[in-house]
Length: 130
Image (cartoon, rainbow, N blue to C red; front, side, top):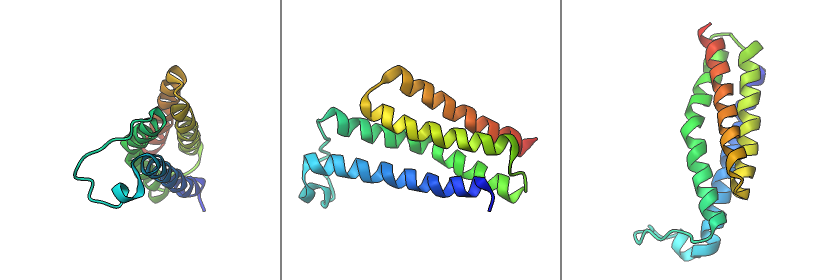
């Protein structure tokens, strides 16, 4: 199995981690009855940590579709390996670290990790289009 597909599988683990952390931190503060409701009141968690986790999920979801498309595109086009594989590794590693740093509230490093993840996507794109 190409490494890009394995990394795609691990990226789903990261996605689930984002979702579970977001749900747990919000539900922990707002309560399970609210979490199980239609949430028509639009209440938001007040803790910095819960809000950071929610923003980290939103930030991940902005780039995740591109990663999925590029990883699958590399496999379908039989262009696995090389710079695309390295880019996929960089993307996923940067996104894991991004979640940790975002939750900790470390601003400059968070932005650098986001930029590094974008470089990983660009590397994948170069391999796919090259």
